[in-house]
Structure formats: C-alpha cells, structure tokens
Length: 161
Image (cartoon, rainbow, N blue to C red; front, side, top):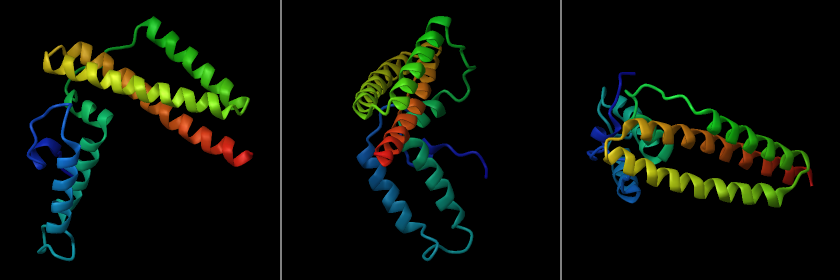
C-alpha cells in the first residue's frame, strides 16, 4: 500500500489536537460512500486508505507519531530510563500480588499522565520545539504500552479470582 497522509484524506490541518467527533462523522460518511458493495471497481482500495488514516488520527499516540515521522529519535535520558524501570517494577509487584486496586489506581495515573503529556506535546509541536515534542512522544509511547499491559493484567487477575 502506498504512503498516505491521514490529515489530507480527512481534510484536516495537521495538528495534535483534532475534533474527534468531526473525524468520526467524516469517517462514517466515507464508510458509506466507499463501502465495497457500493463503490465502482477500483475505488474499493480507498476504503483501506480511509481505515488506515482513521486508525492513525483517532489514536493520540499514533497521531503524534505521524506528526513527527521525519524527526530523528532522541534517546531517553538515564533519569527517564530509571523512572521507567521503577515504574515497571512497581507494576510487576502489583501483578504478582494480584492487587487489582493498586493496578486500577496505577492505570488511572497513567491515563492522567498521558493526558498531560498530550497537552505538552501539542504546545511543543505548535511552537515547533520538535526535539522536545519527540521526547514527549517517547514518554507517550511508554505510558501507552504500560496502560495496555495493566489493562490486560487487571483482566487476568480478575479471572483468577
């Protein structure tokens, strides 16, 4: 599949902050217009591009990653790596002791952290402080991954009870 510009497909100005309600509405319109049962031969490829573009734009971390796709990766500092290691150890401790309440609190903390990181990313991106935005994006990736792992751990622990 050729490279796509999700912002161009949905006619949105490239930005971290987007109107997700408007995006969803436009996506549903495209789904109806280019549905394989309705589209002429050859246009069905458009639905794949639309789906791919929608998946990028509706996810905050993927959208931020796309915005900085041409920026070289900035390595985390030793302090950031230590914080990530400590965070992982704490998470693993809660999982091993099957402490669902602590995992849920940790998940809530992560959601709040991701919100703050997203806001900081938006400011850095708008001010064209791309190295700073790249560092924030690295943190967003880390916490997004942790959020998924904690979600799965909570389900596992609850299933064991």
